[in-house]
Length: 314
Length: 314
Image (tube, rainbow over all chains, first blue to last red; front, side):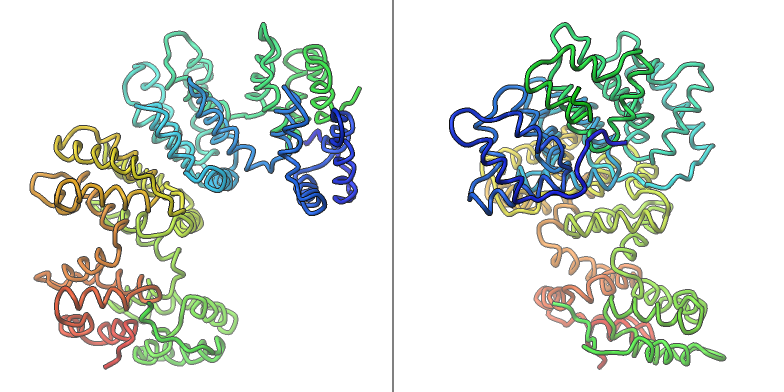
């Protein structure tokens, strides 16, 4: 369930006019901007961008960028984009990082449905005039490259049919590959990048039944390299992405210095999708509501914006 | 330019009724079937399939399969399908072959536009309840697998921008890789599976300018393995698919025993697209019209059908 609270009817023109008022003159009225955009879904935000351009011959995104700053600016910029455009942007930022943030690449590839992922790839073309896999391949090497390129290029079968014998066989392959850390990467890549999500879940269940431990847990032992970490993230995202996001949020909040990038990314990306459910998982795991943790660790208009997206303005 | 001659108006119902007459009773009227279906484009054929089903509660494809036989049956079966469905079928047949016909996989991946290829992948899901890359990966190993999976999963950027410096650099990488036959497969795979077609054409041109020989020619030397052969086909298809198809047709016709599979595949696949242009390339290269070569080497209703699709019924 989404956490976003959006009106069923709104006027893009009135919203655009109110936003123009909020950015006019010295200093922007952040609260007014949050009150409007923090309550509009993707379609509505796109209509507002268009109405703003038609009325004022100005790009709303550029204007907001120049009026806002810091964490709020970054969060608002990500929020106002359409989902696929935002994922393309997040992927690109991850790839431009000195140490590429491959977990974001894995996350986008494995949480999205096969069709959503394809739309992200198209959005990447439109925005960066290159393909996503092209940038992934240029910025990585070796087995990690093969795994990441395979994941971002995947178009998995979406049906729920499961082949139990294949699940057994491939659970064994994964087991062997994990045991002999640096062998058989090719088969791991083949399995993780081409099988359907339902088939993979059956394989991971088989693994747990046979070995008494979740495959992701096994991969969190020491001594594994980036390839195995990427493998672990892929499995987590495919198996239960809500649990995965709970962990990302928990790590972001519990970090000595709170990780605003991760916090913003998850809240902005999931607010319109299933942030309510992720919140429930978070509460179950931590016995505290996500809103409270976020409220405690953030401040100012950035805090206000995140809480608004979480459907809780205090 | 297409070679197919189709009427601008036709009645799916009348066509379906005429087809039913042609398949009724003992022995089908092949000439009548060819006269109708050999003159209908993909949309029209789909309408006829639907009308036939509505009128007679029977699948036209299944009925034709049981009424026709041999090369004509195979050609008609491929022809009546929608283009993406047909490519999915051709890929599947190629993969089920004892020695997988990887050249067909490369052909489908590299001749199709990025969007067309995606539609083929979707058709593969619908028809086989698996992904195309899944079947490619299961049936291949090693570097050939990596190249083929990369090609079928690609969604290349479609713009015509070219980076000349990158073309120079990657032409050098390809040159080195070809020189040291069994090294640097990873970089070859990265370049061929992720770069845009325009960028790749610039790279191949750079190669020819620097080394005085086309890269495909260089790869036709002896001593290259399947990986390099697949690489050569990919480059041919990306560079000039009409020239590539001319060669496939020439080999099929000049073979001691004519290769009907290849002949049917190219004619059926290109009749609605650019078979006229391929015919021109064929004439330039062989000083004989493709229709004449085909007429000389085939016979009966199969011959009649191919010539009909080529827009030439003698």
